[in-house]
Image (cartoon, rainbow, N blue to C red):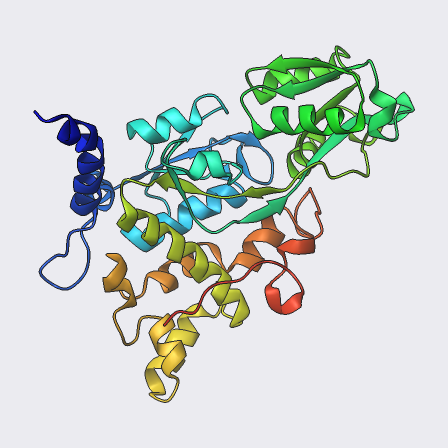
Length: 354
């Protein structure tokens, strides 16, 4: 085999895989190996954290809840017509990318930061959807510790989960400030927070949302405070493999549908009425296309025409998902901040459904 051909063989394989994943079907839609697999087993396999209140958490009855879980439910509803057709897999930070790459899970909806190295073909080769929670890294300390800024942690041990952007950000920020410290690294979040509560370290660092969520499960939550510092950008985003772009598009536009529904005032309670209204009024072209009354948006994605209706009916729009799980209606009571719609000064923005 000529040397040039041998060197190009991996590229040929990638192209062939991509073409196989999105070959046109006879009806003008697309064919996706992942979509076919999900429909064949009649179940979406979704990778989650499983122990993070507000994002993905298993209740006493074994049921899953949280913002990340609702993303799984929305996708299952869009693809299979039923948000209950899901098998959840709890994955720690070390397991998540291997599970996705191997096909063990179809979708990763697990407080994962969108980064260049994770997105790039030469890195983890993920395909990220829309960011569902804009976050930043923070630091939590005991209120009685007297620590009020990063410089107060000089020479002290800090608990951090290994193999995460958190570990890298901690090193970068402390290096920038010239603050020496001792990182205590752990493989899982359970180990990390157990060490912190066991006073093996003076502080624990992670995404601010995770720190707030974990604090709700502490014996004395009010005894712990988040420092007023944001150490990084952490856009938390669902991900799939980039070898199946048709599947990635189906996930992407399902999530965008939740965001656009909020912008249009379409809720879990009124989505059926809005669809009926659209059917009765041929003049509402944009609404009719968005809700699958006319046009072929669903077909272009390999989804039902009313995939947005199915998703919103299952979990509500993005604003409802946020408020119920992490906002005012939740134990976390997080401010929406930059997670507001773009029309309200935030970063949540869906491209046009056209």
